[in-house]
Image (cartoon, rainbow, N blue to C red):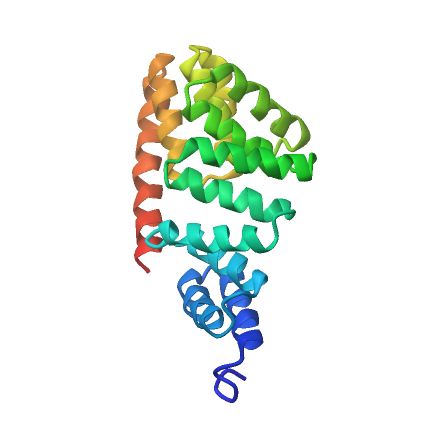
Amino acid sequence: ARRVAPNSPELLYEYAQISLRNQLAAEAIVAMRKAVLLEPDRPEYLLFLGTALMESPMEYHEALPYFERYVKLRPEDPEGRSSLGWAYYTNKDLENARKQIEESLRLQPDRIIGYYQLGVIAHESGDNARALELLMKVVERQPDHADAQLTLGMVYARDGRLDKAREAFETAARLRPEEPKVHYQLSQIYRRLGNSEGAAREAQIYQETLKKFRERNER
């Protein structure tokens, strides 16, 4: 279909969605850049191009202007606000990130992802009490949220609550065993708890998963 109609924005959009579902972010980005050139003010194209860029380890910093344009066109969409906030977060602008994600929750108070994102921002801002409050909301409603469990473990570790940190990290490792950060954090918490065997094991797994992660990014 693309060979027959290479300049169809709708077809490029459909192709990009299928590409991203198959973890081919680069293919999705190429298609969506062309679609946005053809129809620069179509909101769903801007949102999806930003989403695809956020999945790329090399291009995620380029997502911000597309989300900003999307929010100008659809200011009442909570997904757009949340995406814009997370793009600000990846650009180290924590204040604007917090404002946009809080606005997404005002528009849709039951957005679990918004509480997780605010919890991450609170943790990085040094506000452990607020981070704990927000992340507990997430894991109480969605116990299998691996990213929330990982960040919750980091909050507990900073507070010196090592057993609680270990529990959270072990849950995250069970939910997402391919994530290098989980095994790194587990190795550190086992070391602090005096479990040298566990620390060595997790350090080895960390190196193995990190190698695979880098190989996937390179591909």
